Every structure is written in structure tokens, then in C-alpha cells.
Image (cartoon, rainbow, N blue to C red; front, top):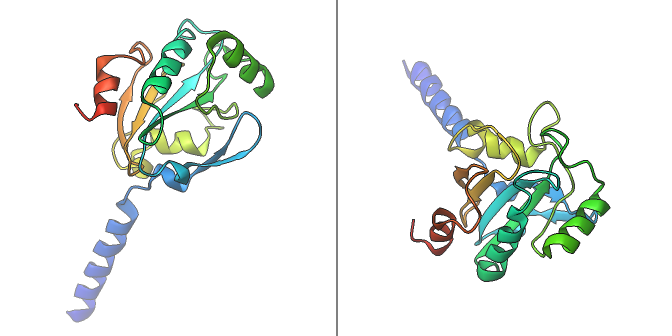
Length: 181
């Protein structure tokens, strides 16, 4: 009887540990300039992660993303852009070309990471976390198009997915940043 109870308790503890979500702060990535970027440096900040492309109908959202970053970015909020060529080859450029495009056309100052895959067999680990409930603890999702936004709280946990049509300066996003959601 005692062996059965120990086995049951051990299984419950192991299952509980395995189902705990990980924090996005456990991941790292690389900037457009090729520098390592530890997401752990974002602890205590709300984070908006967005997959971007320079030849998309939603590309003008760069302007509002930069406006949002200039207005609310700092100690409590940050935007991280991840260029991706996964949707109709709308981000064909190199990391240097992407940086030049974002700076010249939209004055982007928020951190931009190296071009990655946000879906499919080559999905980047950050996006594996964003889209997999077994890793993020909240929900499974699919990146449906460029400029899909993921909201991460100050503790590194996924809060919500915002689809491409929602503009960065929307009440939904601004209220979340301000804690009015």
C-alpha cells in the first residue's frame, strides 16, 4: 500500500512540475546587428513581441509601433520586433537591409532581432514558446500573418495574442500597457 501511495504521489509531483509554464525570460535571441540579446533583461517590463515584414500591407504599423514605444517605452514597457519572411516572402531582405529600411522609413528605435521563422519546421524557440501552451502555460496559437502581437507581462508570462488588424495604438494595447485592461 505504501509503495502504491509513493508511486501515485511521485507521479503527481512529476506531472505538476512538467506542466508548469516556462517564462520567456529563459530564452535568448540575436539582434539585427548580430549581438546576443537575453530576454531575462526584460524582467519587470511589459513586452509586446511582433513579427514584422517590410513588404506587407501592415508594414505601416511600424509607424504606430514606434509611436507606442516613444510614448510608453522605458522602464515598464518595451517592444521587440522579429522580422520574418514566412508570409508570401514579404521580408526578403538581409538583417542589414531590414535595419536600414526600418530606420530610414519609420525611424524605428525599439529593439529589432535577426530575421527568423515564426512558424513551420524552422520555428524560432521564442516563437515556439509564444505559440505552445505546453511551454507558455496559457494557450496554443498560430501566427496567422505579419504584425501579429503577443503581450507578455512583467513576470515573463504570455497574457494575450493580438492579431494583425489591431493597430499598435489601439485602446486594447494602450490600456494593457497602462494596467487598465
